[in-house]
Length: 77
Image (cartoon, rainbow, N blue to C red; front, side, top):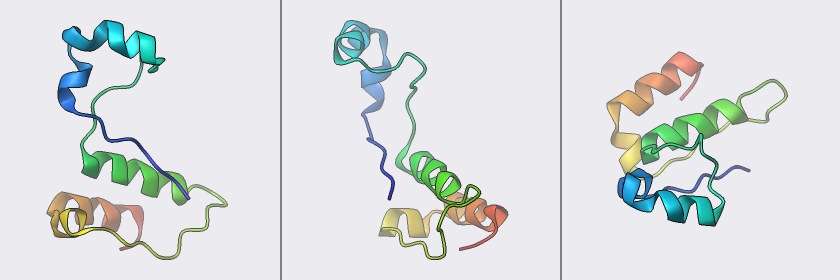
């Protein structure tokens, strides 16, 4: 349904600027943790008309208090 590519933090540093341009990475793309990317995907799925009735996650996300609290704020777990 959705996906986001998790990239290493160092890829967003100045040493990789030329590579990011060569790869066609959008300039507005910034580093995001796995948890942050997951929350963005949940928000997109819950957008008006989005079919989001069930959420499954891995052990990292499931144990993350901030992730679970953010899900509660979004209206569901």
